[in-house]
View 1 (cartoon, rainbow, N blue to C red):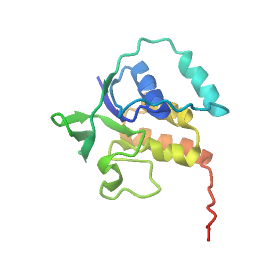
View 2: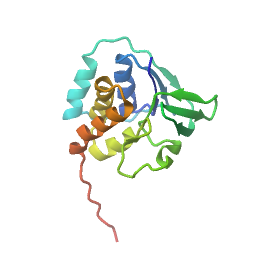
View 3: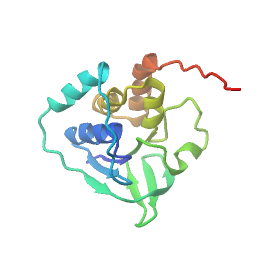
View 4: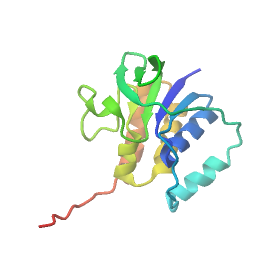
Length: 172
């Protein structure tokens, strides 16, 4: 069975865990506490939420209150170091919120959303503003492609047209 570590139990992290478990992935979700913030769901995310709820499946995933201290990708997956337990290996790591060494992986380009079995879902969500769609498309990518690299490439290509161009105004 394929294994995934999802860092972050916000809306995009839980949607990713939900969707991957429906595709027979063994999922571990890292949560750093309660999330009480109301999330507004509209547009494409409303459609994605309806679609996620329409797929009946018993959901089983493990929730941990650990912190990732290091990610060490290899040819086949990622060895993850935790603050409170032994290192563990996963097929993929999905960072639904900024985490540890994901930003410092060698050669990770600023514009990239994925590399070396690690998906920076939070970055895709920042760029698109559609957390449920980004999460569902990521899991769809793994249903369509058996290879991580092909799945990540399809996910990025499919989601990139929805990137929002943000303009920043300098305050003087």
